[in-house]
Image 1 (tube, rainbow, N blue to C red):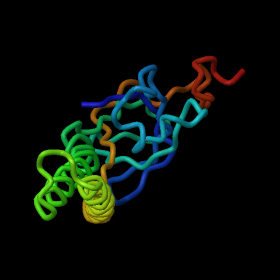
Image 2: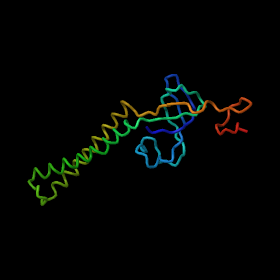
Image 3: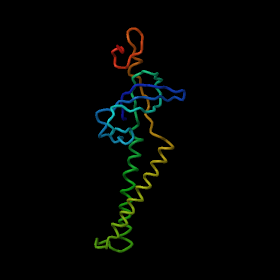
Image 4: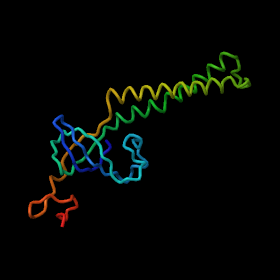
Length: 163
């Protein structure tokens, strides 16, 4: 599972919370970079999350995302165009009888068409999945409860007591 730390900034009655998530050191090379916007310059990302741990505003929490959900979507996005290329190339070769590789570019043209068609299907399936079952981080545990200063005032979250 992909995990990162964050601070709860807002909670809702629907079991969700808004969390300011910290980006980890490996975000640039993570396979979920397109889902969590890790390529952006900001060090944090404000994101909705399922509040299964019962966290309150100000709590430092651990966010997790199921890797299987991300990998299945990535597989569709990558594999459908590849299968489209192969199916198109073989279809072009079979239709014009140039299995010996000396055809007039029919395999290339059909392969390109198969790639485009596979990519369009992959994007369509991805959008349907995202609308039906969006990938949402889950607050798996509370790391620290609300940070407060010795006088009881809420701190800025830096541990200094907002002095």
